[in-house]
Picture: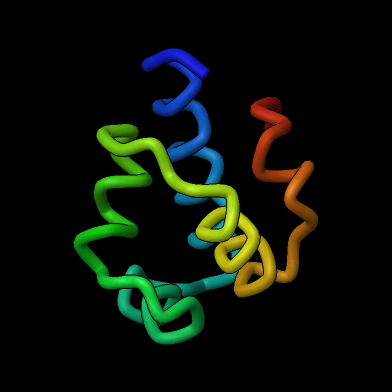
Length: 72
C-alpha cells in the first residue's frame, strides 16, 4: 500500500466509525487501541498491522474486506 492507500483506509475507517455513531474513544475502548493510534490510522500517518485492522473491523461489525474496499 502507498500513502494514498493509507489515506483512503483511514477515511474509510473514520466513515464507518461515524456511521456507527462511535467516537474515537468508543472505538478505542472496543479495540484496546489508544485514541492516538486510531487518530493516526484515520489520518493515514501509520501503517496498521493486520491484527489491528481485524480488531477495528470486528469493533465496527464489518468484514476486513469492507475496510479495504475504498469505495463508499
